[in-house]
Each structure stands twice: as structure tokens, then as C-alpha cells.
Image (cartoon, rainbow, N blue to C red; front, top):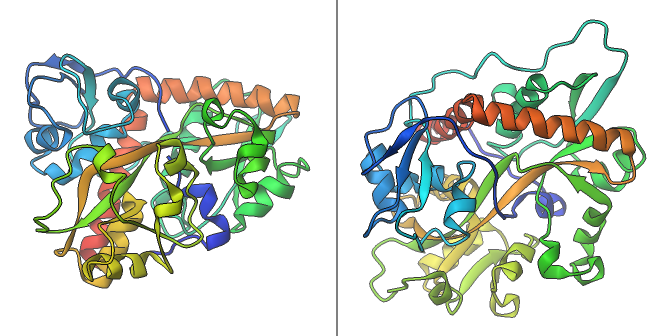
Length: 365
């Protein structure tokens, strides 16, 4: 099964990354990571911990650390540098890989007697977040469905897929043909201060209200396996290296994280960036972790490259046009439902299922 990726015109919609929300119901914190289970577990950071070590202890696989980092509340607790952990920080360890075999039966249902239909739109070809080739049209779609179902929204919800990301924010939602769109990364306006400082394609997002994060994302820094001359110990070290980012992929997340965009190595594609990495023309490749793993697998170089312990993190959101009062009321109701599915464990089941589905599809290619 081939993995498809968004067209370059849509990439600023997707490959971005920020912080997360909420507390999670689960087992009490333990002194050391226990073997994972089918539910969320609590854990307090101790001396010598790294996310890779915690993932190894809990999951038996150190490369699964983004599952922990991306879980609701963990980015907020840890901060945006996963390589910097403070002793005593409480985090949540999500369900064990392979423990969730199916999606929860909590998807949007038609609610009898509701006079209103809320029309929501998303795109395609960005697995595992949105894709018509995936169960329930992808992880983000499943989260949106479950959160609306758990909310007290006084409307039916219809989710359509139109594979034109720019049209969604520039026309379809702005003109109220649809009331909401997802999944979108949003700029940190505490950093940018004003919309006119943003890259031009990003400026329209200032016209939108955003939900609480529906997903954390990890922009990973892939490195050649076994390379002995890189001894980087922090993200600050990585910033001094030659980092390849494909042409057309958004970079505002990297600017927010303190990277100098002028010094990036610009590849023609993710494949070109990985080729440059293996030829010694780049030190790291910066890609969303799912995209990087899928491309490396398709190129047959999974044994030659690996994801480092460094990343830039962010969030994806459901958006409503800021001046649409009714849509913003529904956005508030959605946030209530989102909190509920995080607290009752439905959210953990969904993201665990799709992480596993991604691994299964790679293995079956």
C-alpha cells in the first residue's frame, strides 16, 4: 500500500507543530515505567530518564518515544524540547502498541429531532491524519467525530472530504459553505505579534478561531544511522547543522523554534533530502515523523536512517471563521466533547489504533 502526501500547495496546512492540553484519567504514577497496557498509565520523570528510555521500558521499543511525547498533556508538562526532561515531571504513557485492535464505537450519529446540520470539511492524502484510504478517513477525522459525538452540540454533524486545502480556508469556510475545517496548524501569535509578519500563505489563518488541539505532532530530525561525527546533545546543537527541508514545505514552525531558515538545505522533495543525507550533503532531514518514516520505507533506506531524539513539536486544530458567531459556539461545544473523550479514554484508543495502523501498513508494503 503506497502512502500519498499532500500537494505542495497544501503543505502549510499540515506539517506544522506547538503544545497540548488536558489531564488524562488513568492509573496512578509509578516510580518507573511499567510494561504498557491497554489503558493510560501515569509516570513521574526520574534522574537519567529520556523519552527513548521510557519508551523502551514501557513499549520495548525506544523509537516509539513520539507516542509518549504527543499524548495530551505531555508536551505541556515536558515543554517543547523532548530531550530536556525535568525530574519529577508527571507524564502519561499511552496504551501499548498493538493493544487496540479496533476503533471505539463512538462515532458521529444522526441525532433525531435536530433542526440544524453542521457541515465540516477536511482534505485527503495526509495519512494517518486524513485519508479516504484509512479507517474512518484517518485519525484526525476519527477524533473530530468522537468529540462531536461526546459533546452536547444541538446539531447533526456532516464531515465532507474535498482535496483542496487552500480552498477550504480561502473560500469554502470563509463564505460559510462549510462551518469548520480541520486539521490545521496555527501560528504562535505570541511569537509573530502581528499577522503581517507571517509568511503570506499563513496570514489568512489569522481570520480563524481554533479549537483546543486535536493532535500533537512531531517534526522529527532524521539522521544517517551510525554516523559517528554527530554528537549533538540538544536542539541548540541541531540548529548549527545542515538541515534539509523539502521545497514548498512550511517552515514557520522552525522559525518559532529558533532555527535560521536562511541556512536550510532546500531539497526538491523528501526523497531528495534523504538522498542528500546519505551523500553527506546534509546532517539532518526535517519532516513530520510519519512522512519521514513512510518515505524512508518507500526508498528502502529504513535501515540507513533513523529518527533522532530531537524534534520540533506542534498541534493541529479544528477551525471556524472568527466572525461566524454560530460556528464559534459549535467550536466551544466541540472543545467540551474533546475534553470528555480525553478523560474517558476514547482519545487514547483512537490515537493508539492509528499509530499501530501506520506501523502495520509500513510492514505490509
